[in-house]
Image (tube, rainbow, N blue to C red; front, side, top):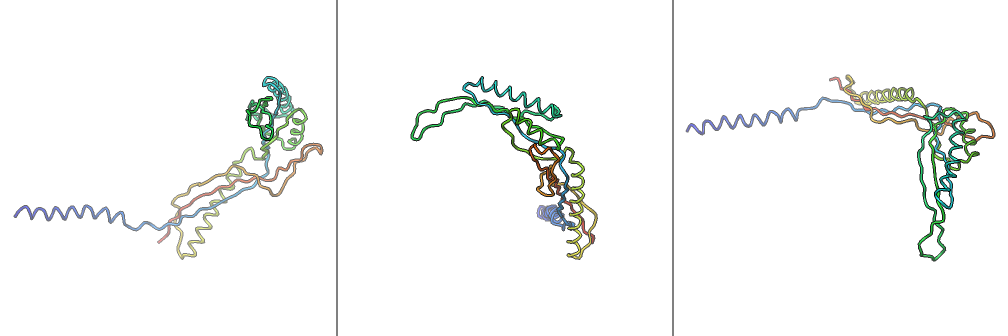
Length: 239
């Protein structure tokens, strides 16, 4: 019966081949502590960003466009006269839309076009906060009738980013040490560290710092901005 004697060793080898990887895969993982840390840094804004522009309406699109262009040219020149550089001026919206007559109650007929409206919007970065109020006052005087999305930020957020990042790492380490102490274990070396999220400077309504501006100018509050960073850190555990 030579065939039967050969089948038994072959079957044993086959089972061993399947068993070895299973034992390696199911082996215990090295114990670790995975902790997230948060850091936030605050700073005083040094730049204002605002969207402003002109909205003009006339019976024809050409008339509305002409009036809008004339007013917008004056507004743009006024911004440059206030020291705003070309790189801080960017057209962020332009549209020509028909204006329809308002229907009377009960009317179902098609609405008629009674004119056209032209909107031209410009996003402006004002780097001199002390002149921000006076600048807005001047452009309104020269024809700007749309001002929106005013915000304050920091031109170079890197110092705040670095401070927030250090605080996030310190926070993660403190959490890991607290967990290790509570569990009665000892932290080993850091296995990995990654930055989960990062925030651009965000306005904070606290410690309001009012810019020193002319009393007749638009009053503005710069406030405070913050940068937030979150890190994820993994420590090994000493056995």
